[in-house]
Image (cartoon, rainbow, N blue to C red; front, side, top):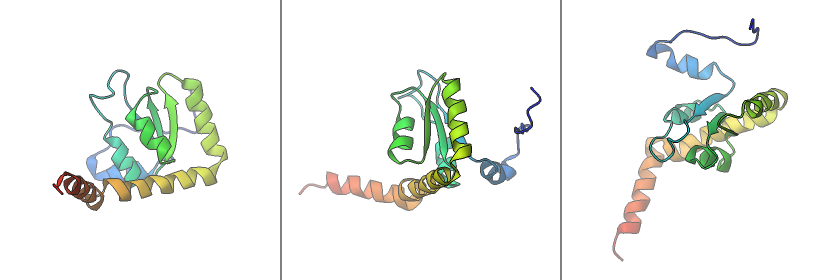
Length: 133
């Protein structure tokens, strides 16, 4: 299509993962139809870690959607909604301040819930609740 605003690269080696994750304006995280409850897109965690807003594409009833919307760390698009995705990208391009705020929220969510300390705190909370009074 002779696109001038898109760069498609071949598979990149693991050593350049950090560069790849930081080269984007937003991270695309998807989960296929019918997979909800069986699998979860682990790429969400690395996307949150680099502080990039998430463009989540999933079925309407998905944990991915709940995480992104409840933490305001990105945008949700229903599977198959190509027009919605195009609209989302245009919104991102025209509202950079909001886009940056969502990226900061992504990093904050990662630090709060998905670091070793955050996960340990959640486990400790579960153990405290399970302790007989």
